[in-house]
Structure formats: structure tokens, C-alpha cells
Length: 149
Image 1 (cartoon, rainbow, N blue to C red):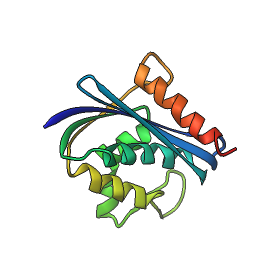
Image 2: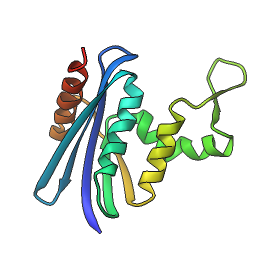
Image 3: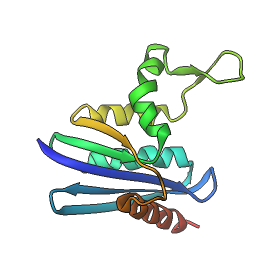
Image 4: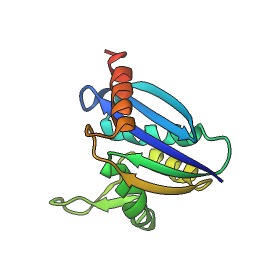
């Protein structure tokens, strides 16, 4: 399997508001960057969309290191999704009675479907720090979001 590094980021001018997503994909010495935008969205949706679009760009099953500064996305895929599914896509919200539907369910389901084709490892990276690919994704995602202002 090809060894791929996929760094992702999402951005939102307001939350909700114009948003952007971006990824930097590395395979050996090759680099691919892509970004996109949505008019009325949230930062969480853009974080998810960045990973989905990065995986969508792969043409064959790969070993993928997904690098994200979003604990929401990483923890959602590595810790929470199994419980959400077993409970019918609802969860308990701290300080509120009962359960509530999981937000962005359609994106979580799409991401889960897409990762099944690959051998995925998740890695959290500190945002806006020293990671060059993370910083590049941040610039691309924010530029995409601002293109809709």
C-alpha cells in the first residue's frame, strides 16, 4: 500500500458563516493541495469536509496518516462514533436532560464509509504552531472561506 500523509484543516469566518476546508496530501516527494468553500456552514463541518475531500482524492486503498488539529474530528472517529451508532446516532449533552441527535451525522457517516477503504491512523497536531503542512492548510482554508465574503 502507498504510504500517504494527509494534513487537513477547516475554517469559518463566523460560526456559522462562510467556511473553507483544505488539505495537503503527501506521497513520497509529491505534494497535492486542495481547498474549497461553503457559504453557510460551521467550523466543525469544514474540519470534517477537509478529511472527506482528502480521502476522496485517493484513487486506490492506501495507508493514510490523517493529521488534524481538530480533536472533534479525531476523537469523533476514534472514540465516539461507535457509541453514537450503537445508540442510534444520539448522545448525551453535558448539563442537558435526555439525548440529542449527533450533529453532522451525514458527514460522520460519509467519513466512516470513506476510511473503510484505507488503513487509517489518526494523529493530532497542534494548530497554528510549527507544523508547516498544518499552517499551509490554515492559510488555504481561510483564503477559501474569505472568497465567499
